[in-house]
Length: 153
Ligand code: SF4
Ligand code: SF4
Image 1 (spheres, rainbow, N blue to C red):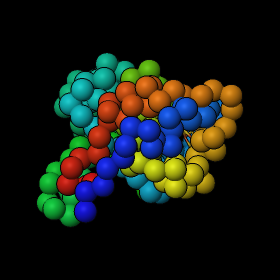
Image 2 (cartoon, protein in one colour):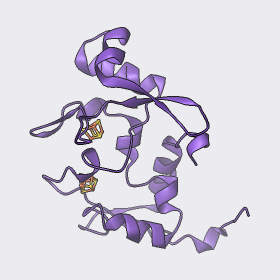
Image 3 (cartoon, protein in one colour):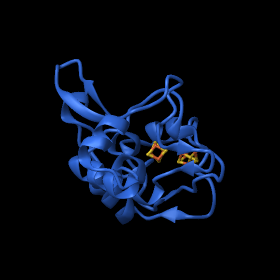
Image 4 (cartoon, rainbow, N blue to C red):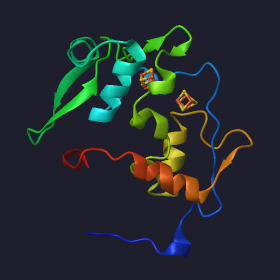
């Protein structure tokens, strides 16, 4: 069934508090998850690393095949699920990090409902923390900047 949300029904009408916790790397390591890469994300990684497209693909990108048989580019991770770009001091390509990382936690699947937002908060200590209130308009921008592949939705 296709649901709908009336304009006045948004639980984040007045914004949401979010402040990434210094020293936390929970969303860059461990299960679950993949970082999906657009062509633009891969170009940004080329810029960050100084490597060419082929080198970046060999070193940092792998193929992920969905249950529907569709191929996607995702970031490589270590056997313990830690992102290949997670270093001692955090993300090594922070200024060039993929859009999926930039827009977390304002993904459609998380801000879809208060329940989902609160549930994500169990994983991310930055959710509902700090004094920064991200406005509804900004949340709308963020959630439209990154979409999970349709075959995975
Ligand atoms: S899990 Fe949340 S608080 Fe931790 S690094 Fe990710 S965004 Fe920041
Ligand atoms: S690219 Fe950077 S921000 Fe994204 S998961 Fe890897 S370490 Fe974290």
